[in-house]
Structures are given as structure tokens and as C-alpha cells.
Length: 444
Image (cartoon, rainbow, N blue to C red; front, side, top):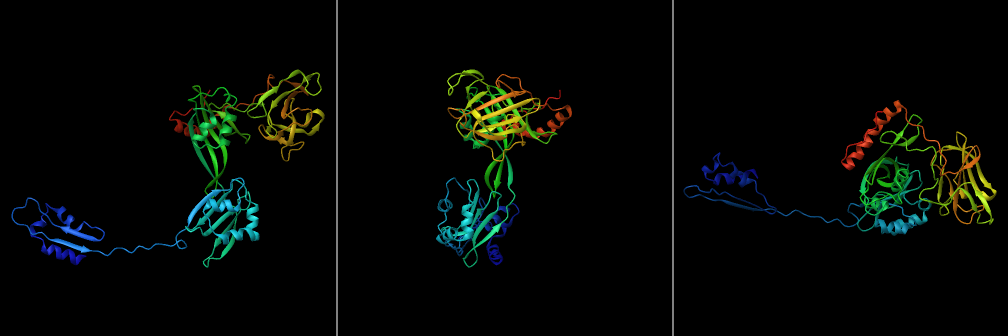
């Protein structure tokens, strides 16, 4: 190349090397095309004849190599096990067309064990060549995250190796949306999981009636956790902060761990959202029979109904309405399957006509407000599935919808300062979603 430059320079007139024309040489040596290199020196408006030299050189075309299906780099596929999945449906979804690998999974002891332990929601990762031949397949073998990897060695033979559980990764995500028709319609539009949407309804349910109060134009923002397994989202975690603007009124909640070590939700001002008692142990339900005298549908006479009935399908989860200790779990006459919780300050609650109890629930166990304790049923004297709920004070039944129930303890002055410092980053995240000033806790 240097020799060619020298040859061109020797043939150019001397006046072309003026400092006033540095662009000229750049034009000579700075232009290159694939296959052809051409350089032409042109001097406009120069008096007298000008010698022009054109240099053309043909370059060899580069060699292009096409990789076949077996030699190309494999594609990476990440997916989750879906309800009702089989090994064949997983292979089809991942683009695997490899009978040898399929036969191995269906016949080898390690493969059959992995298939038996597949559960919906767990991640599956595969490296697959363009022709469908499997390079590696990683399957979960337990809820703890242990995995079985099937791979081909250098000779193409299939081998198996086991991997210990990799630590799950928790990612903080943020979503914001405007309601046009319904809460779940808005959450779907921004890809918010249903579990987070249900949690929003639970958090703001004491301030907003989601059956009657929602309006088009209402807005919500939420900061929450998503748990990832090998880069694939497998479940949602906690809601860390949320805001709901309903009919122009702004409601904000923040998750905070107080001195007791328990995580609870508070407003932006530091007021606990946690009530002493929940009015209803069920989410999204209606009262089918109130407290007081009524005509009994089974005994056909007038009797005092010592609780409130909540209509709900069999299997609906029942939550503890307050912190307490299990005083009784079992069967009692007309109550059918019943759980009785003893709380502080002379209070007790009863949950009857249950289809079954929460796994491991037993007498003497401590439970927290909102914990799952049982499921709705129609055992005992019941004409259909519903929950019979009682609040007892000194063992005397009271109307759960009217009685003045204890409230949760507020934050002390010292705790309020700690709450303000801990909640500020979360409130800032909400303000970023809404382009609005972050709410702050009151100093009063």
C-alpha cells in the first residue's frame, strides 16, 4: 500500500501539495469501496492544464462460510412449565426436535425423576441448534431450585449432571396505569400480575369500595417484587409501596418493619393500615345473613343468629381477622368444621361451616392477622357454602358489623422518625411514576 501511495504521489503535479488543499490528499487516499479502490485528483478553478491521474485496483471478495445446522451456535430458550404440560409439549414450545433426547427423558431413571417433579411456574432453559438438535436442557427437580441438566458431550453422547439450587433473584418493579373500565383491565394493560392487583384491592379496601367507588380516570401506581429463577420470573413477592387516586383523592401505603420485627403497611403520614380486627375474613364477598333473630332455614323456626354469614364458593380462603392463638379446631354440632381464635382483651372469633382447615393448623398455634386458617364449606347446619363468622366478647357473641373493635397501636414519636427515613426512597419511586411531589410523613 505504501509503495502504491508513493507511485501516485510521484505522478501528481507539485502545486497539488499546497497547504491550502489538505482535503485533496484525503480524497485521494481516504476513499475505499469493497471490491474496487478508486482515487482521482481534481483541482477546480486552477489556471492552465492539469494532469489527472486515475488509479483503479480490484480487490478479492471475502470468503463467506455458511454453517450447517449441527455446527451453528445454538439458540437460547427460556420458558416456564405451564399447567398440564408434558415433555412433548415442552419440547414443541422450545423448538426441540430430538428423538434421542426425548427417549432419554422418558426411559432413563434421572429423566423420569425430573419429569415427575415438574411443577407449573418453574423455569426450563434449553440450548437448541437450528435443526432442532438439543445441546443442553435444564429442568427443575424440586421447589427448592435444584436442577437436572441434560447435555451432549464432545462426541454427541447424552450425559446428565445435577446442579444445586442457585439463589433466586429478587427484582423491584414498578407499574402505573389509568383505569378505563375495571381494575383488572387496567392491571392487564400494563402487565401487572393478578396477585399484585388482588393485593392492591386488599390494601386499599378499607378506603375504597372496589365494587362501587371506581371511576374511569382513577389512577394507581405500585412498587413490588418479582422473584426470578435463572432469569425467568416465577412468582411475585411483596408490595413495597402503592398509591391509588380515586375520584381525585390520593391514598398511599408503604410497607415498613417496626420495632416488633413485623412488616406492616402504613399511610405516607405513618398511620397504620392494620386494624385491630378485619370486618370480614374473606375477600370480595357479600353478607347473606346478618346478626340477630331470623327464621332458620333447616329447623323452620325463629332463632337468634349469633354471627354473620358471608356467601362464598366452597374452597374460598378464610383469613384470621386478628392476631391470636388457636383455641379450638375441629367439629362442633351445627357449626360443622369450626376454628375458634382467642385474642387479647377478652376477644375471640369463630369461623364455621368450613370445608377443611389450613395445613398444620392445631390448638395452641399462634396466628397473625390475615393468615390462612381454613376454607369455606357447607358442613354442619348449612344449606349451601358460606362462612359463619362470630366475634365474641367475654364469650358472648356480638354483631361483627357494628361492634367497636380495638385499633392497632400507632407509631411512637421515635418510630415515626425512623419510618420517615425508611419510607422516603419508596415514596420517591411513586413520585417518579406519577411525576408528582413525593408525599412525606407529618412531623406532628
